[in-house]
Length: 257
Ligand code: NAD
Image (cartoon, rainbow, N blue to C red; front, top):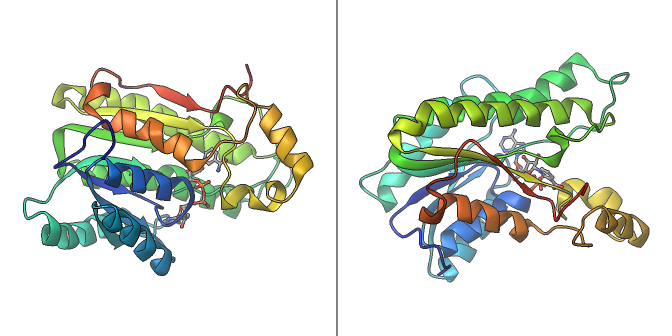
């Protein structure tokens, strides 16, 4: 069990079949929460995450939750309601982690309208409506944690639309914090830097020169791991973070200092 006990809490993590989402789910599970492992296509991988959490004495279930199309968020919560009561008869949710996201490398010249729509649909519209439909389930004192990116505040014209999605997400976080504060609900963003996950595998893994370069961008001198981000999310989900809201917490190892 982690230091910040989440015993009795119920968490939803979107895109939890791999990468940062998986690490977040495993950490929240280790800290005592019952965790819904949202996945789009990777059922087997989601089941593995569930099995890993259970093996360590935690509680979790897989939740088919593809996002990006109209109606997806409402469907997610219907499936959640049906599944959660098997594990926790009272239902409801305490922690919502909007992690599912896609990166699209495209500068302004090569950006297509379809590509723009897709990245905004998954990275912005989905979190808006996951929260909107989740609000009546979210208990007072709950937590909303949006996985943003350092790219929201750094000029990176080669991923121009992606950066804009994360900027929009951070503004959403700010407004959620204000609107939901009276219910004791906090809303924060976590902004990772370069993390060793599948999205970066193509250029990073097995390429020592790229790895050295990526490591040199962080003051702490290494590439981030999914667990580094999960630790920040676990803090924000915990009782210790009750007075932190409307913020973007960097988990970049000091990139850009
Ligand atoms: P990843 O590609 O390894 O994992 C993304 C997860 O989201 C997967 O489980 C995938 O199935 C899910 N997902 C993708 N599209 C989906 C959809 N339409 N519906 C439902 N689920 C979907 O990526 P990651 O690196 O783990 O990224 C997780 C989050 O962290 C993203 O929001 C990403 O923008 C953000 N982030 C990552 C980095 C990094 O360097 N890896 C840096 C900053 C921010």
